Image (cartoon, rainbow, N blue to C red):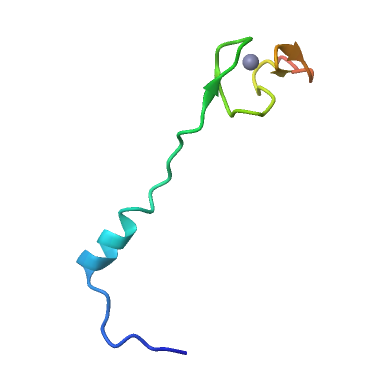
Length: 60
Ligand SMILES: [Zn+2]
């Protein structure tokens, strides 16, 4: 296995990790309750998908 000749500096390490941030960009709103949901997934707050109720959500 190859061994690095030089230790990666803090600056170079941080420059590499500048792109590692988590991006949450793919979010849409539910057509029933207008809450934020993941696209192509059943809404977690009202249980609807494509305008009709798919699963029952129990109220607490
Ligand atoms: Zn909903």
